[in-house]
Amino acid sequence: LKGQLIDIGNSKINGKYIFNGEMFNQIPYDASAAGFDAKGVATDTGTVQYALGANVTVGISLTGNTVFGDSDPAGTGNNVFSVMDRLITAMSTGNYSGVSAEIGNIEISSDRMLNARAEIGAKVNRVELMQNRIADFKLSLTDMQSKVEDADLEQVLIDSTTAQSIYQASLSVGAKVISKSLVDFLS
Image: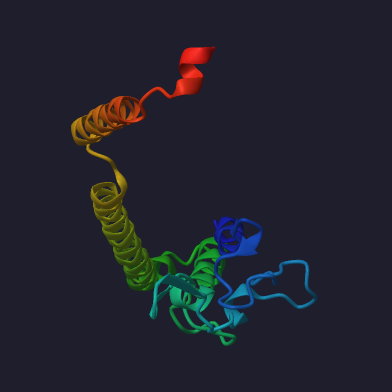
């Protein structure tokens, strides 16, 4: 289970580690590093910001310490990796009261992870709300553009027919005004 939690802590999306703040190009829980101890890892505290609009940004990242617990090199706190280490030790020695004593810390870790999920859920809702507002705004702009640029077909046909009639009448009047000359009769 501890190995699975470390793998989750090293999760990537689009080639970027999601639990290492602004240091998303560096692995947060590098198990191959010498002297690695997950409970003592302090992930980057920076927040990756995503622009939703003009002067509107939202932090889209969580740090490993926010999700799994603050760095706990001594192993006495409620960092999920410290809790797992104590559980492993208690189970391997048959210390069932030690296992029972960790139930409260497991609940604290579970609550911390649920709070992180709720925070991400709220951010997702905000982004979706902005997407819906932008889609509505786009529809409104398209409607306004249509009213300004689109032609009224019936009016265009009436105007075209009227212009054609005026043109034909002008040609007819012009032909009648210019009378035949003597040259016309000689040919």
